[in-house]
Image (cartoon, rainbow, N blue to C red; front, side, top):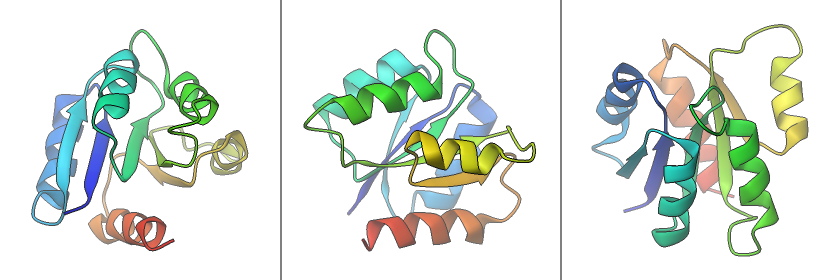
Length: 121
């Protein structure tokens, strides 16, 4: 079973993502960027759903550190964010994210499509 790391500080958002994915994937949850980096290095997932607004270290910094790590640099990472202004999607993709999904998640099929598409690559 493929493993997905969910990096999200909001427990309600983590619960929603877990409810959508738990029958399809093994889920590892992290509340902070620092915890996520430690956990991702220890138990490498197949894909990361990464919130942008996190305590201690934001998602952009987490992504930067993932991309700088030779063992993790090719890891698929999806920005999971409430940042939904014009140009935000492009900004995150240019920063190195493999996908972008707005919160709140109202269309679970969009989440599943992004994950399945990236895992198939």
